[in-house]
Image (cartoon, rainbow, N blue to C red):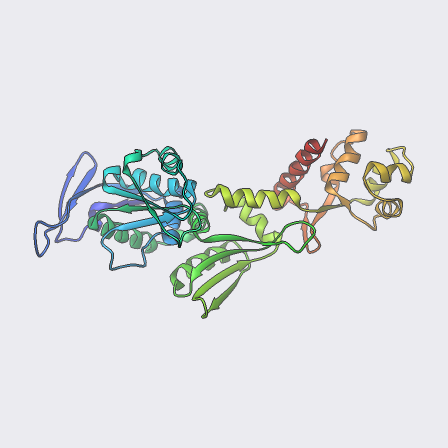
Amino acid sequence: MIINIFKLIPKEWRTSIKNSFVEISYKAKRGKGPKSMKFPEKIVVDEIFMEGLGLFLGDGDLNRKEKGHLTFASKDKDIARHALNFLIDKFNLKIKDVTFLIQYKKENKRMINEWSIFLNIPKNMILQRYSDRHKKECISIQVNSVIFRKMFEIIINEVFNKNLLDNQELRRGLIRGLFAAEGNLGIDYLENKDYISQIDFNLNINENHIEKIITNILNKENISYLVRNNDKDNSKVISICNWKNYKKFWEMRLFDLCERKKDKFIKILNNLSVYCFVEENFLRELFEKQKLKQKELAKLLNSWQPNISGMIKGKHQLLMERFHLLNKRISQQNYFDKISKIRIGSLTYLENNDDNKEFIKYIYNFKLKEIVQSR
């Protein structure tokens, strides 16, 4: 999709077109009026554009209609960089028209230098302010132009007037940006290993328009969810459970815009207990070819003899790491295809079919790394 900026400019505004750019201004009721701004004559709405839009819907101030500038805030350097590059690459924004402000509670002498390098902006353009409300450093990116703010809102409205959520690439880009801004991984620390209890989108209770966008996308991706409103803290939470849904998130690259959240997901994924259901004949053959007694197998697999007996009979499933170790000892061919399904934790089952095969292989490769690193 391509947006023609010239067609969206209010008729009473002043415009001039030169070298594929539109310079926009208007006369104020008092004074000279706001500074003019240049926009590309045409903007391509692609996956990257939708990612940026999702970021600003989540961490921007688009709900503050009274404001005369556009502001984005984030504690994550990579998210802030995505947002800034979005404005520069898609809207022709110039750094000189931006104010950068870091708010912090804990003093960090390297703070300015670190943000300057990461965002690729001059250190002298970054302001700083102490704030006891911010547990971690947080940067705000403020575009100092009422024209930019108004045109940004007009363009966003134009995008949502189209049926873009029917396009898989665009809707996945949008929810990727929304998750980077508003998403959270709920971790259950009561288990022997950390476990994802749910994946959430955390909104204000009045952000019904964003709720509708997220739930529409989830519906189109066949992902089940639950919406909870809490009047006490004015919060709205869209919760997604079950690894069948998390697997779909992985395929959508939901976590790619925020390294902190992606690392958290991968760490949990790496520590999962994953069990293999193996074809009966292959399972029997797998153990017979080891040429080991059950006591020796128990030592090899870090288990105990009664459990080995249950594995051989198919009563107990093999941990994926153990399944790999047995196959490696006898150089068994095509062993991956002998897995009929896997169990993640105690609840989620995934058939080893065309829909799930790539995700199962992804987990399997994690387990291979885990085995190598433990030696």
